[in-house]
Image (cartoon, rainbow, N blue to C red; front, side, top):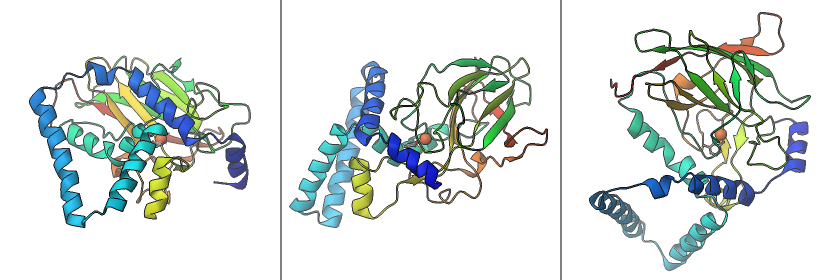
Length: 294
Ligand code: MBD
Ligand code: FE
């Protein structure tokens, strides 16, 4: 991050509680929990296994009362700070994603993270996402095409894109940003082709002033994620893919706090060859039919 970006971060600083509460509210309001109808046996198996794992840790590591009480206080703080979505998406979602995508052919996915917002403005291709006047960063022209696993072009495909600004802030989770800044739903053309014009995002630190930040500091870890663009692609009759795209050479590609980097998710933008400002990159999507497995 440059010094100007640091300055704008300070001026614009939201709090972990603000961002966390929004993520919590949005998830709770999505109705996912209340719609769930998990059989009793399954709840018993999963909750039982989780409780056993925690008890085993106590025995294996001879956990003291001081440590147990610190854990209790910290868990209460995670909830009060609204950081359950952040905590779970940073330290657990990658394994859930891995387990659930192993049999799906086509383009690789990775975690969604806590800051997706459905219903972003729909744009036809070629699209330019919403930006402010004089937006900081390197312009990025991102193009590609959708095909099925046999290489046939897909119709009615769309790309939802969301990412942070150059100072590491996500719209709707930091104060003072336009509602749909760096968020869009881009409809591909009849040959499955799309073009999205945006800015290359900067490396990103998860909020450090809440419970997750406290844990990171107490454990001597770091809070960084590599620069990334979040993507959700879909087409009727095909399995959707949620992923993130990264950039080679980022200092945190190898130690992402959220363990969400995969070699298949690298974008390597080059200076534009058409005289336009900034960089360009191509990334194509291969979607599997509903029910299709490897
Ligand atoms: C992010 O932007 C993110 O992508 C994840 C996984 C966690 C916290 C913030
Ligand atoms: Fe993110």
